[in-house]
Length: 171
Image (cartoon, rainbow, N blue to C red; front, side):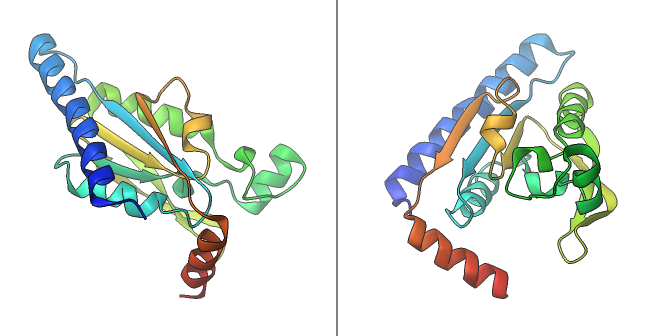
């Protein structure tokens, strides 16, 4: 787990991104400046916990999980010739980048809702941001190298991460 001082430093960094966006939005007055923060790390490393903490500390921010962009098993086989949710090709990166573009242009978009039980998208929901998008997921930083303004990699003891994953997946 990150200590409070580390979390405070991260919050200050993200707050500077937000302040920078607001200042640029005030200057341009015609185009909203959206900052993208990606949080990557092993399964069970604490990515979601950190992302939620940053999201709660930044009103108007948008938290998106890469999980929303998983291709179904069938789509993965058709696209890649195999199905592996721990492979970056399992993510619909093109759709994610399209949605980031919409968020940057108009501040809102419609994102997929993914069902882990049936491993498919089951619908969509509209989301919006006023300047900060937090994207968390196994490959967030590596699949969005150009789109990301700040990349965080959460490193964790792999035994602890495995225990967290088992606990999470059993609930």
